[in-house]
Image (cartoon, rainbow, N blue to C red; front, side, top):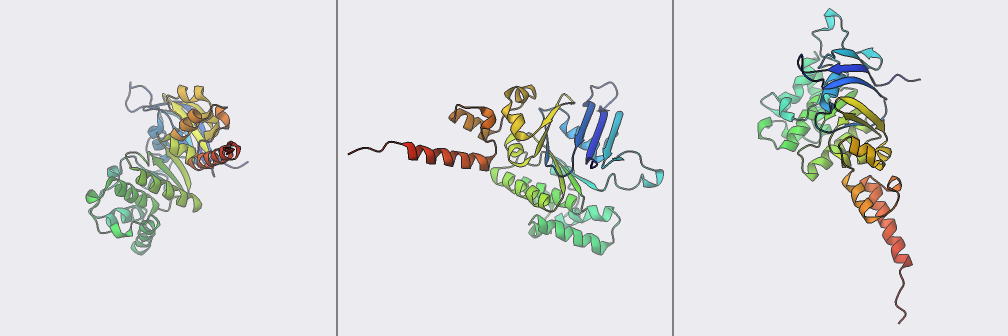
Length: 290
């Protein structure tokens, strides 16, 4: 049996003593090789869970393991090293990660922090910018970029560390349709390169189109985990999580009065489903006899 990518066992965390728990008694296993989306209403604990996985937060109780290794139990000699360098994290707000005067300096910062020689760090920075097709932004100041460009630069900074796993917090938030498609394409590229991806998001259509597995949180606890098809087909589960089905699924359900569990939820599948329905309708229509 393979070792899970992440294991959280009875994890709890709160932001200050006496405050309600942001995450409480959270037990969760995430397998390698799956595209995992973490969903839930505001305040459900999505961002906190990512921080715990990365090792930026220390749980008040419970254990977090990455590939079987405890995330927090480090020797004194290791405490000045980056926290879990095998795992990168891209925050929801790119400005939280952009700290330098130019894009190039920002992307170069991460591999330098890993202690790499300058030549190797520069090679990684060039590779990250090229992978995201933003090499032309290298000399630009981050504050002069669009929000979508800032998102890509922040992701490039994460990529430059060459992590084997990347955690994304709301990568499509506040982006226009073109920006969302660009981020989706970036995730596809990273997945093809073998990077393990975990995404916390409110974008249910993105979840339907991208994820293999949906982890659903509610008030800091695990509500359950399912395939996107199983989760979105069950209206009671969706309502219990204070979420909505993807727009494509809602549209198809309105157009077709049938078993919601058999209806497509992914954009490409819905396109083919509608094309087949329209084709069948044309074949069965009655032509005038004159």
